[in-house]
Image (cartoon, rainbow, N blue to C red; front, side):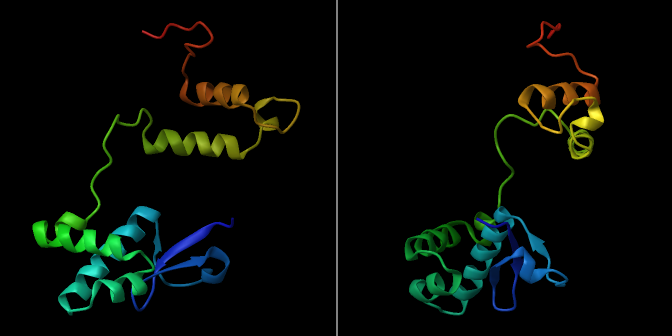
Length: 144
């Protein structure tokens, strides 16, 4: 399956292969942003009097999803259909650390002294430790 670029189109929301949107001025959306945009567009159509079936066809979702969106919208307004912050454990790495790791890995395994340009879990772990100046609990480091 190819990588998809999710973009807001003129009518509502569209999902297009990334190669067909190269150079487009439309904003790139993540999957959660796309889902939210669909729900918000559905609210606009609710207010215009569109039926659940019409909205489902236009949005490319099942009618049950539209019924659920309509119920949530009636109970809590459009804000009830907006994305919420992810719950669960907070990330251990900040954005700068993730970017530093991605940049280091993008240079390839050989750039980090490995014989072959092949990534293994062990090698990735070693590079992460090096980039973040960490010691590994798995290797007997002090984890306290």
